[in-house]
Amino acid sequence: MLELRHVSRVYGNGAAEVAALLDVNLSVEPGQLVAVMGPSGSGKSTLLAIAGTLEEPSSGEVIVGGRLVTGASAAERARLRRRAIGYVFQEFNLLPGLTATENVALPLQLDGVLAGRARAVAGRALAGLGLAERAGHFPEQLSGGERQRVAIARALVGRRRLLLADEPSGALDSANGEMVMHMIRAACRQGVAAVVVTHDARLASWADRVVLVRDGRVVGDAEPSADPRSLIDDVQ
Image 1 (cartoon, rainbow, N blue to C red):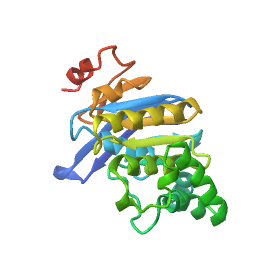
Image 2: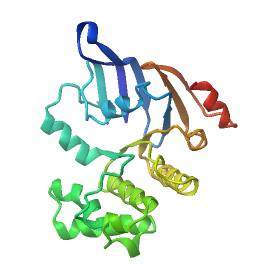
Image 3: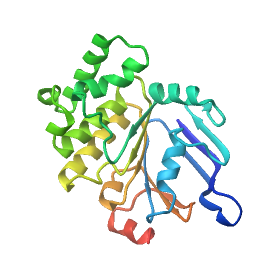
Image 4: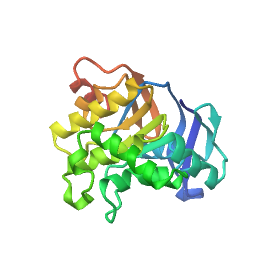
């Protein structure tokens, strides 16, 4: 579902040049959950932004759902994100003037789905995450865990087959963090491919694979250890 081939991302030029990613190769199959770990500044968020077509690589190829997206126009990338890619941001990025239902329905409406149908789909998605009674509430009326569930519902509505999550549990307590990973894992059982950036080794232990990134390079790619604490040692 996702493939990065020899992807590099360099900012600036000359003496001011900074390499955020260097010759990264990564593939994620449908139904697979991959956790990306590494120290701050290692390139994890840049990797996720490039995988989600929010940034272009300086070199290399990005393939989503069998389609080469490197070099695609901004409009083509926006269509791909609306139709195939769900992105969960650490800060939730919900629109404050819209209810939970309206936030989840918005991507569908932008893709041409009639408002009534989009809201019905959004309502079912929220109900599936235990938020039926909170669907008419605005983000400021929701807890952090509830807002994150709304963000996940928004990321999964429609026919999106790739879920990208940047520190989805960063603002949550341990119980809500576990719940978020449980929901992502459930989406994978439905065939969604997921890539999750996390600093939390216990949450990374939910993944099928853990990719370790350091100084812009992938330095490890393996199944998580039975003892999640060992992952912390690997990324130091």
